[in-house]
Image 1 (cartoon, rainbow over the protein chains, first blue to last red):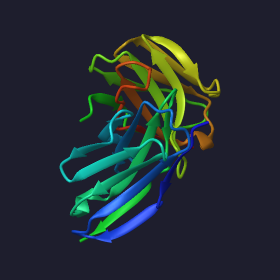
Image 2: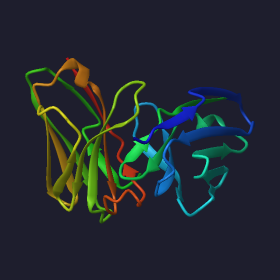
Image 3: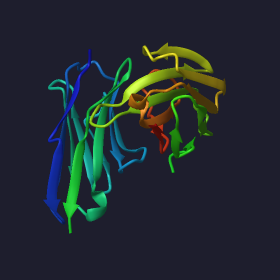
Image 4: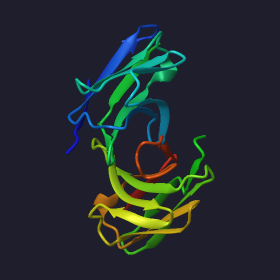
Length: 109
Length: 114
């Protein structure tokens, strides 16, 4: 069964810092890897979707990479802002959507 | 705004009550999902509907009863719930159930069972 792990579970950084969130998955037979943002008590907002044939996707200050062979994805956030504070979830899409438990990010003004 | 709308946003119900959660999407998607999110746990898939037919039921207790009257609407009927059912219930949709397509989530319904 696919297992998705996100490290660290929580991260605090000062505003303006660049940061990397990590996601690992045990089964490389995936269709895609998707990163979501979740604000407290709210739903999930899709940030980036990387198809299995792709290596990375970029949207504004966000860049996500995918290395299927090593079972890893990273989400890079440049010049972090207090508004980036949220929980970030990654999902591996295969015969199901497998979720990690998320990284709770706090950007300190 | 993701295109997936859930109502109500918050619900408090007693263990003997009957209530329903509603999800609506006008994205033209053919697959819809119910997820449960409890504190400090990964999202748990509850039900999958594809073209209005239930195709997955992940060992969910019968006190949760889904209904998909058409491809745009999904309901979760609740009755005789337990306090441990308190959670955020999220609805999602995608073009099809292959999981190749991008999933879009609603804002969720925060359910509290008292």
